[in-house]
Length: 298
Image (cartoon, rainbow, N blue to C red):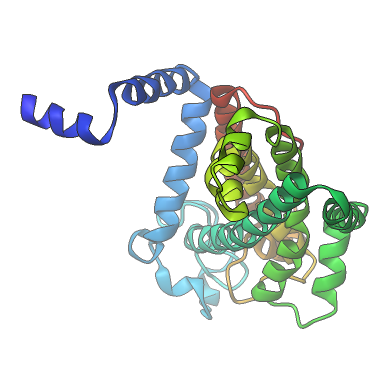
């Protein structure tokens, strides 16, 4: 046991391990945050292993079984079946895959792009800061969903176009946040020491400033994940996102509206699935915000 402890101390200092433990305790003492983490992790696992845990994997694609159409929720079909006999629970699991892929792509493009531009603007200042922030303000002046609708409607509606449409506007929030964080760090002593020691600008930006900005950026990314899910579902709902027969959550809600109120489960249960995913991200983000004691713009 002592050799294992000494090996661990070689890589992680006792002070850092104590900090991690205290942070874990603070997070664990917030029941709603833990519930949010469980929801998000559970949905991610369900989406990853959807082909293996879904009761009818073939129903996620082109499939019809009119003899079993409009079946109410039951043990065989927990969420019922839709107008062509497809199992809705199966399609929700595969719909989660699409929603989480959308989140990963949009934030994977928007966060690095916005953070890089924001760090450069906040650190350099001057005309570079002015140009970057005026471009950012221009995009921010346009409502996000309106810009996404404009881009998505200009091309053939597909998931890829929906991803591009949403990602094209999501970097702006991170550019403004990172710019403010970087500007507040420029005058700190550790930055001046790095300059005196001859550190390059990329080193200062990404090795000195960025690590001190990760907490608010992580909190915002977690909260934004739910908004990305809603935006993607909105585009699919109006026919500019995921196209049938792919099981987009917004598409499933839209397809079921014509059968309300009799076959309510076709719309209500996919809508509830969206609500659970968004709620999980929001609860997790709120927990991280309290954990790191940061404030981010919504």
